Amino acid sequence: MSTTPPRLTTTTYGVLGLLAVRPHSTYELAKAMGRSVGRAWPRAQSKLFEEPKKLVSHGYASAREDFVGRRPRTVYTITRSGRRALATWLADPGDGPVLEFEGLVKLVFADHGTRDDALATIARAREWAVEMNAGSLEAGERFVENSGLYEQRRATTLLFGAFFTDFYALVATWAEWAEAEVAGWPEDIASHRIPPERIREVLERARWSQQPD
Image 1 (cartoon, one colour):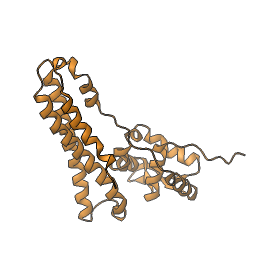
Image 2: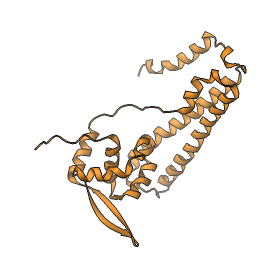
Image 3: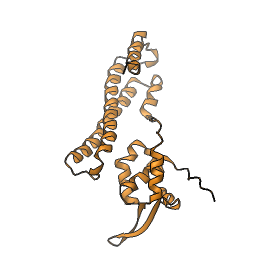
Image 4: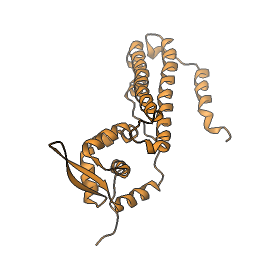
């Protein structure tokens, strides 16, 4: 009999982590995923309903039938094996972020469209940052007021929230810079030529990683 542990995805471990916090029904997992793991790992949302059953099949979670009023539901709880598997996964450093940004892809080819199209794309990016930050701000205020859902996890939530706070601010700041930049371009973007000095300005900003600690 093979003792090789099963190969699980980051999505599966994300669900396992939520079960380590407390037992969840599938519906509760979906809500919790949207508030936390789903923001850092969006693909987790698509196959969420399959993951708890997968954990049960590997012995990492148990399932019991429950009722909310007359409505049946299945509640999943992490097992000891599940906690060991989660600890093993946490001991292995994860990879860095992978960016998906449709608006930025459109801007790469903006010279085949209009300046107004490019400006609208940039404006939407800033709107997105403001909208997303508003949700983070609301959640953060609940934690400050001691009414957050996972009050006992403020330390790890601080790290998570700080990343997205800075990320949304980065997108908004970039959008403001990009809007001012593109506003000075001609209608025919393809005819525009950027002087080398402008490129050097951005290169200087990229030298942050070369600064001494």
